[in-house]
Length: 144
Image 1 (cartoon, rainbow, N blue to C red):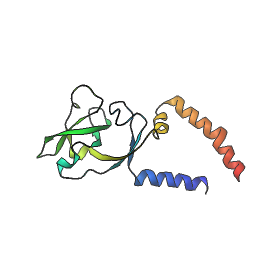
Image 2: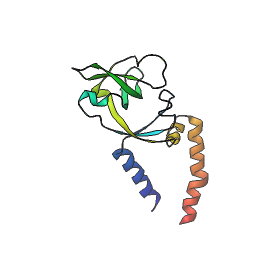
Image 3: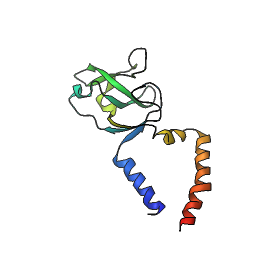
Image 4: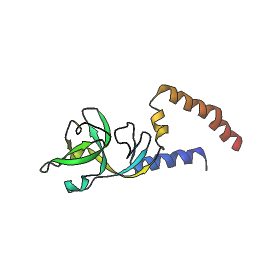
């Protein structure tokens, strides 16, 4: 198996299996920073999401949030109230329409997402690039 096959497999898995990485402490102890979560599309009826951890798009933060659905705000339009398990205050500030729910968490792989989080900092990206240049490429060339 060459490096091209590996890259194709990684791309296929990331497209076929939707996943996200937990990047805050708001869901501890259920989820921790760096956990990789596998998600599945949400199902209707609206009540099927209650009590489950899901990922939704928040226009307020312009980002995806992984929190628990704690209530249905509007049954006619199927909008939810979410809250992080570790958040001592109230629920998230905005109600979330069904269309903004990207998926329901069905499986957690602890700490596997730390590599993904490291790319968010420039220094970590430089270390990773250095690792590829100094270790991976020579190992690949020596293996030929």
